[in-house]
Each structure stands twice: as C-alpha cells, then as structure tokens.
Image (cartoon, rainbow, N blue to C red; front, top):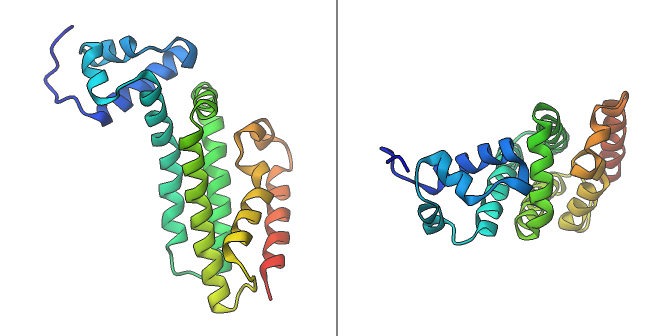
Length: 195
C-alpha cells in the first residue's frame, strides 16, 4: 500500500466507500476495495468500522442524513406552518427524485443498502416524522391546524405521501403528471389539517 499523507478519518473512509459502491455496486464492493482506494491496509479501515456491515450502515446513514439535514432547516423555520409543511414535503420529494434521477446506479446501490440497514432507515424515518410533528404542532399552536395529536397527524401525512418519497416508487417519480398528483395529495392533506 502506498502511504497516505492525510490522516485517515471516518469521513474519508465513508467518502471512499461511496465511490467504491458507485463503481462496483453493493454485491461486489469490499473493504479491501475501500482500503485500496485510500492507499491503506484493510486493517486501517477496520479500526474505524469494526465490520463490513458497520461500514455499510454508516454510509447508508450518511446518505440519509443529507436529506434530513436539508429538511431540518425547513422544519425549524418560523414561516407560516402551512407554507412550511408544503415546502418540507416538496423538498423531500425533490431530494428523493434528484437522488434517483441524478445517479440511478448509486440510488439503486443505496436502495439495496437501505434494505440491509433497517436501523439506519428506522432512525431516518423517525427523524423525518419528528420534523413533521414540529411543523404540525406549530400549526396547531398558531391555529392554522386543528389536530388533537400532532405526532399522529405527522405520521399520517408521512405515510399518505409515501408514493413521493419511498424508494419503492422511484420509477413513478418521472411519470407525466406526477407533480400535479403530488400537489393534489398535499392540498388534500393540508385541508384535512385546517380547523
């Protein structure tokens, strides 16, 4: 292995893992490939991630966290709750659509990894539901929405919009009329939340 002049960090390993996954796919990518890309021994990678499964889960979490971080800024905003809800749902749909359309091979790879890593996916969904709960609770507090349980309403909104963010529907995200269908669903949900 060629010595590397940079300090090996978990972040560098995750970046390299993402590139290796893009090149080789989840079935063929190995820790040895990641180590080779970094110019280190595979033992160096294992010092940061104890198993191949732990490395794959960490890269999955990193990928999902990118979406969560963008949406968290919208959820924490102080705009009108209805506008925030619409913006948040639109941003979620757009983020997922971009991931699927901009790099379909990597999206397919992450879909496989997401199936393997239920914990990371479960945490991601819980985070998104918590963000939605904050928006709906703010709307309830301001009188824009009238729901007895903001958390239950948030889960319902999340599930009702699943077609626009669940990766199993990715093939439909470029279909003619999908944006109009998305808008119709969001309009219906917002009307249902109003007093």
